[in-house]
Length: 178
Image (tube, rainbow, N blue to C red):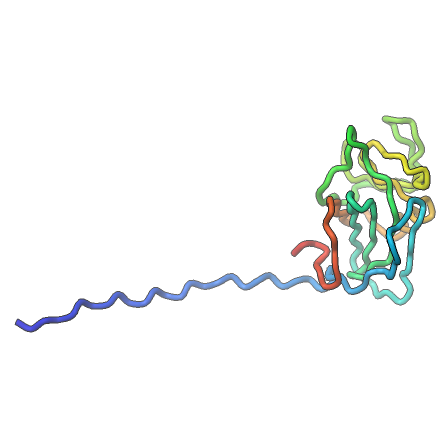
């Protein structure tokens, strides 16, 4: 009787690997405004000169209390902002702008909210306020008035606002997290 060695199991077939999704270059950070030091309440910066057309993304870092506006990946605006109090915090997440009103008064607090851009159905908005006073809001993101006007004129209903707590964006990062 001849001895036959056991047959080796065939090598497992290579499993297809998912290739990473391509990053949409329109949302990759290509420029951050050259701002020295922390932005103080009431201070803002804007430079959209020679910036090509592209989608608008607004970011808010609650820890830094800074709102930035990006156009096609180029930061065109940044300002120190007021955010919610511990009792009425500003929510984190991704919020499309659902409504815009140049002149608006809060129906909850009977307070003027110029350049209002609604983020939630329960009243959280971006709007102009006296930021230099340094007070907290009822969950809204308050901006210096001239800066709020520029943001209002730049955004459209449907543009997304990314509100994070302590997330730092750097050159080459994707604004959409993809």
